[in-house]
Amino acid sequence: MQPTNVAKPSYFHKVVDCQWACPAHTPVPEYIRLIGQGRYSDAYMVNWVSNVFPGILGRTCDRPCEPACRRSRVEEGGGEQPEPVAICRLKRVAADMKSDVSKRMPKLAPKNGKRIACIGAGPASLTVARDLAPLGYEVTVFDGEAKAGGFIRTQIPRFRLPESVIDEETGYILDLGVIFKSGQRIESMKGLLEDKTDGGYDAVFVGCGAPRGRDLVLPGRRDITDNIHIGIDWLASVSFGHITSIGKRVIVLGGGNTAMDCCRSARRLGGSDVKVIVRSGFDEMKASPWEKEDAQHEGIPIINFHVPKSFEHTHGQLTGMTFEVVKAVYDAEGKRSLVPTGEPDVLVECDAVLIAVGQENAFPWIERDSGISFDKHGLPVLGKDTFQSTVNKVFFGGDSALGPKNIITAVAHGHEAAVSIDRFLNGEDIRQRPDPMTNLMSTKMGIHEWSYDNDTSNDARFKVPWAKAEVALANIRVEVELGFDAATAFKEAGRCLNCDVQTVFTAPACIECDACVDICPMDCISFTNNGDEADLRTRLKAPALNLAQDLYVSGELKTGRIMVKDEDVCLHCGLCAERCPTGAWDMQKFLLQTTQAGPACRDAGKPVVRAGGVPA
Image (spheres, rainbow, N blue to C red):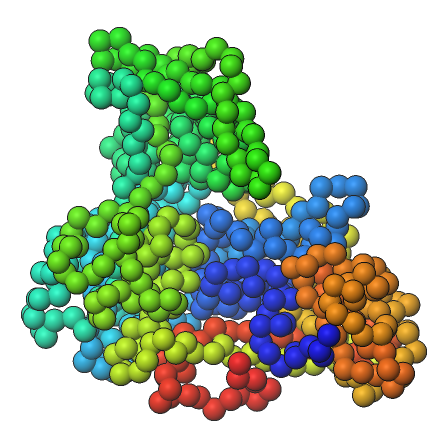
């Protein structure tokens, strides 16, 4: 193997598993350390720069960072179910315990004469507005609702996300000089593009989400006029107070997060017998594991491998649904098929059905002769990484761009689209993406002292306290999760392994004494003869079987051997660096920040590299 090029930003970025997995690349260990120090406002702002909505995401994020968390891997085999650091709920701590951060928001540059329209006031559009408004662009956000937030406001129940949190975090963005035209839906893309009022718009961003829920056309569906609802429409009606009750026996169809929100909402609106019925197996459901767990915690059964066949009714009045029982069968290539078991069909009686079997994009307001091309799935044809449509000045992001996903992905799209718009309006090639800025700095403060806490906590993951069931289930606006208190947040933050503090090896200083090999608690380090990667992985002190994690390989040492470190289960404890008699090992903090819209993203405005910084 060739020596690892640690100057390449992606190498150490990938070692920070949580940040690598986050679509917005939030520097997770950085803000968790700040929380551990009680610096909640600083932690909030680290989040805000990357993910824009720390308080919202701290309650509702799909948490791609947590399955990636190294903590689960190093705890494996310890007897208990391994649990990642509660990254998401620590984000909420920063939001809940911060002081006033309004004075820390970006200062506004003078107007530059360019106008941008954002269609929809969801997370993607608001991210574009947040990134571009401080640069001097006049940003106008159009939305059909009275308040900003999009589906954050209309589809996430208040028992998960209080409206006050939405108001606060959308307010930070609107207060940056953004013009918000509430109650104004754009009815025609051509009309918007041809409107030359005040010079027209120099760029348009479409972030209106995937607003159409899929229906389920089965026998009996067209004969029933009441009590069958499309899940996302029903959640919006509940959010706005148009629906305040539901029948006692409720079937929720679907296995995603929307289905979990529907069933838990129905439980609070009078449904005493609420069931989620899914065609797939439990593990194949698209809902996040914690969302399924929360529904079950509230006494809602999830019935798997039941395929809906028909809606049953008496003279148009819904009485129940019939299901076929199936099982999963896999072929030689691992492809799954659902095959009937031969058991009798199952009739489930009900008073109401909520259909949450998926969402799809709907752009009835974009004329097909507007110049914007769509693919066979009804999604816009976009440039790779640029989010630019076939009309150069029109960009898409969030669910509008690639179909239904989640808030943090929409935020990431917004950042990238804002870079594209900024470069586009400055006459630069938007296909050229700006490099991130990275910083690698030693944390050494003494012979055996580091500027971070390198002790490894043995604590299991701490549980977030809940409101009492009789209180939470009685009112749909009572927040269920209460959040960590300061003492618990401190202890949970201590579970973080500081994966951004990297073990950096200097081969010329190594005397091959094997002291680091002896002291490493995870047997990560080996000195051996070189070979190809597949061979090396089997010859290490502990075989490196996780191919998703890289090997750190040195150049040839004095004896002809090389140093190989398996990054997979490293604790970042610094014992190798403490034990090394020559300083060949050092613990260096790695910080990667994505480059957002502004002078730093433009060819004509590259900043001077800051001290210790490495341009990617």
